[in-house]
Length: 310
Image (cartoon, rainbow, N blue to C red; front, top):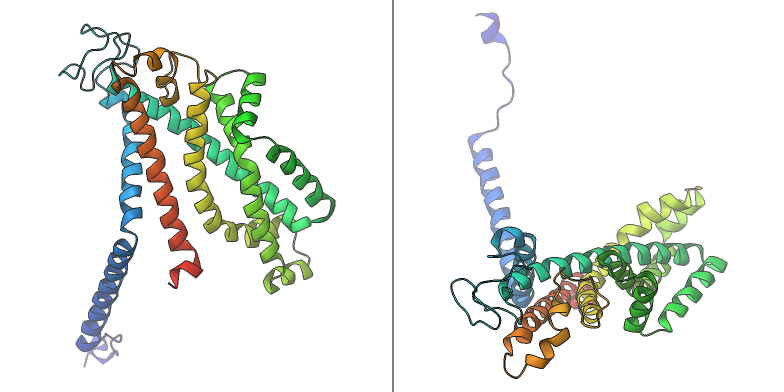
């Protein structure tokens, strides 16, 4: 007998074990599909609203390629033209394509809103972590600052900031972010106060872990779920605040199109005779905010353990 034949072969899984493993994989795949299907059936409104918001973001991102005209281009059909192959939604009071301006307006409004929400979430979460973890004079100082910001109505605070700093896309985004920070701070601080007394946090402090490590490694992950819900609501609030500032003439200066700017100026003079000038950007604004609001409600239902048990 040769050496090769006398050597014991490596153990090879039996055919029945391989078949059993394949069946187990199929069962797990079917279980995942069932769970996804059950989630979609339970949160179908959130799926629809999330898909709608995703399409709006896609349209805003691809506006330079899908818009039929430049937002500042004057069309040969003239002002107040009705829908036509050259202008699908008609033209405004000075002959610009409404569809192109709505698409580019979505690009500007969503960019400002998402940027402001990102800054507001990061700023509020950082202050909430510091305030909730350290307590003492740091907590008192941060909360008094939040009380000062809360003393002003949100729109008045944003108007004051833009009036002092000047009207631009960056200043509008910063103004909206400042408006969002107090609410985010309250949520983050309350979550940190609830987590700070847990055993694994006390154990990390007992072994001398650096406060930054405790906050980033152990406390920050607990903020993801609640702040995801807050972020969904904050984007809608940011869009409305930006539109309000643009409506008042404090948004990005012309010729940059925004939805609020399309609703302002002499558009109100033509509402009776040409309602599409206000209705088209108004419907785009309403649909976007409504889809974000419904998506936020679905995220809350999916991420809140108390609501998942129902």
